Image 1 (spheres, rainbow, N blue to C red):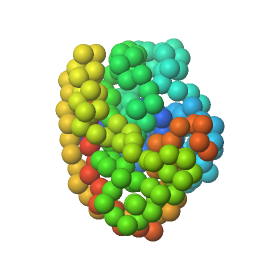
Image 2: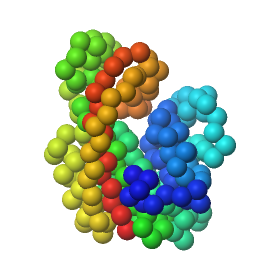
Image 3: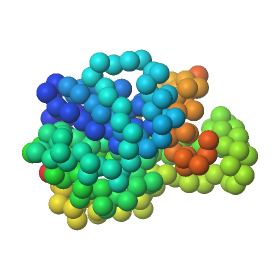
Image 4: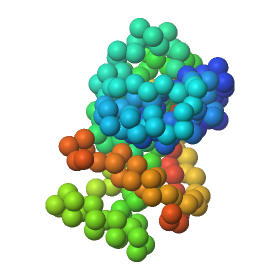
Length: 210
């Protein structure tokens, strides 16, 4: 993603729907400044309590509030807007159009999805997580949160329709997840109305470049 948008330490990136800030903190090492934006105060409070970073700011707002950033970034000051595991809550077609005036030449949107959600993987711990969350919600947990092929194709078509050059990149890696990371991942995917493990992960990054 950093290479796709040629990020430098002079760039500003907006992580929309940042949740607990997991992607925001990663981006902080690759850009001059990162804005983590989320509509839930509780999510932002958890993000703020994580390791403080001098080049990260947290904003309260949703995808429908992106237009309010025009006075600050309407002259093409943003290098990228990233959305991870949250686009399924947003009006993506409207968002893709609203973002364009904010982006510098060569900038764009990155839709980052971690393949199968934590609760739908073929492991014993994933099944246990699925049972716990299903019991909490009172309904079986089947949602892919926009990581399925049909959703990815729909997002790609909407990016192209909004005038972006679309590219799909797949990265396979293995990582150790802490309990806090698992909880953060589940909370980030849940509706605002709802209140150490080994995992093989496939990250898909759908980028739309101006």
